[in-house]
Amino acid sequence: MAPLSSDSVSSQDYRRALAGLYGYYRPAEEWLFRQSPCLAQEIGIRRKYPALIQDLSALGLAAEGLALCHDVPELVSPPAQLGMLYVLEGATLGGQVIRKRLWRSFGEQTPEITHFHGFHGDGAGPWWRSFQQALSDRLDAEPSLTSEAVEAALVTFASLEAWLLRSAKVILI
Image (cartoon, rainbow, N blue to C red):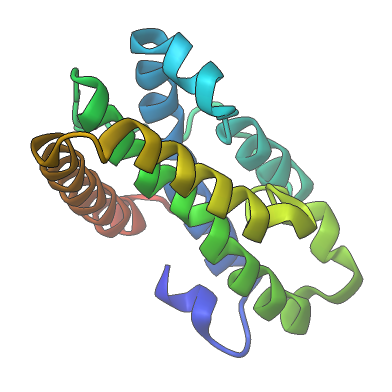
């Protein structure tokens, strides 16, 4: 993801980053939504990997055949799943900063290729506050629940980071 924080991002670097994110988000979201459809529905979480498919397609790359992460942590308890959601949802907030940087490199094409990074649009800030409140409502009652969610978030983040480092070496775009 580091190339996306530079002042100039190449199409190849952006495709590589999106392909890596897709490779993680697809199995993570499929697993999470299968395990806890009610949790996602209660909090109002939507799958983001379709936005990655849309962005990749706009850049001329089909998602079919891209490498998928097989080491996504399978976090079974609701607090652990909330920790995982914290990481997956947090990327959409950070995506706002990345999206602004991409304007410098892609100009008018940016809206067509940043559905993932602009997932919540202008409502990203309010969405994030609402999401944090939903987490607090579910976790603040018992400190051990918060600890479990934090540990799961750390595990998820480490898993995502390891995948992105690994995938950057294998994804040849």
